[in-house]
Length: 555
Image 1: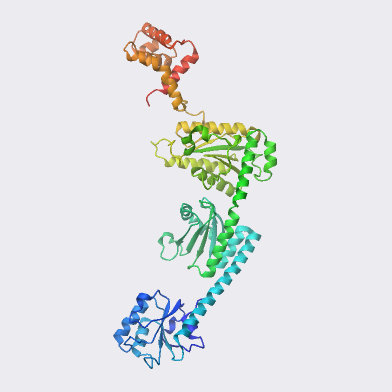
Image 2 (image 1 turned 90 degrees about the horizontal axis):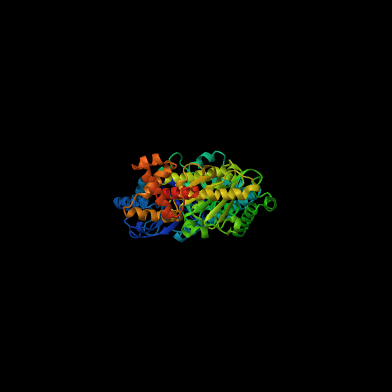
């Protein structure tokens, strides 16, 4: 522990005598400072033992001493050392009374004890304390390393909690508590999820302090909690919380820093290993999409548990950046050799958040999940009915709910997200499942939805799928000649076609809708055939005309 006034008084070589403040000698001393200024307060930082001879003070003036001592106490000076036999043969009573009144410890320094000896004693004690802290820190580091190697992160947290005389907790990328020590700390750590999520928004490495005395944000307990991000990527992969009753000392700080380093090593794979894992993921996915499930199982080994044997779903997600560059740049499916070198958790923005949601949910549920980044797309294989699929759908639903009801999906917004989910499938039909996910993705984009599951592709109307520039261009070209004819005032052919098709070719009903005679309608429909050069008896022509009318109808 750092030097205190008591330790200095008990120092046999200094021969100090306590004249006031006997009950406050256990205060730590940060430094010993000599000053003969009448007002040394501007040069104090707090925690000092001030040494004086009263060269420029009227130490026998009670009022002057009260003001002097009061300012020292207010500045955080922890003690006053008065040298006798220099300017005064004894400590003036006015100074003793003022020190007692303020409760400021007053030490009498004999003439044979130079101030330099006191400064050396304080400096030596501080150095010894720092050495003990460093030694204790190295010992804590060895213990934390040993526990990490033998018991994993749980053992490390247990050892860290003992080192800081408090509690410790590990959070995953979503802010959920993964492990804590002691056991009772789990509920307390869970209250900090929002703080952990806010920490993740800051560039790594990041740290913050929450709770503790004077902080009303967590008044349910008086713990002082430090939060530290873990990982080397831009967005942290995990976080560490350390709760203590007071601020950490030097030895405890060493222990926390060691824990951060060890947890980073255990939660973040090295870049080369991470990239190798991504290449294996991409290779396994390509084999599945190529119809080679047996080869995929051989390459995967035990990496994905039973994922490749149980029914799974394929999820394809696309960012707004992919839609900005068009389908050619975006549509490099993992099965056709997409680049797997990206990092879905660090550089893909909205796709990274989706990958984090899926992987975190899978980790908590003990499931295997395969997530392969592919440019501005992400392909995920996850167990049907499992936590990862549910997390992806919930993540997309939350994004859709957060979007204003009247605001369509912003195709140009690079932070937007579109997700397609296949029907349940097995390894043999993985390619079909991938196509289903792509179809659902396309439907979601056309309908202005964030997420569409393949089972719901046939739900609703087909008309929103016509909201495409190519379809509108076809419709305009097909109907242009009829509209040009109507613009001359020689008949209402477009309205007549719409009425006739809506009445399934029933002349009387369609003519009644238009308010004309059926012979007039028959004449108009012959003109339509003449202008288009196509027969309305052809069901394909009738279908094309109806879709063209729908595609160009005002919204």
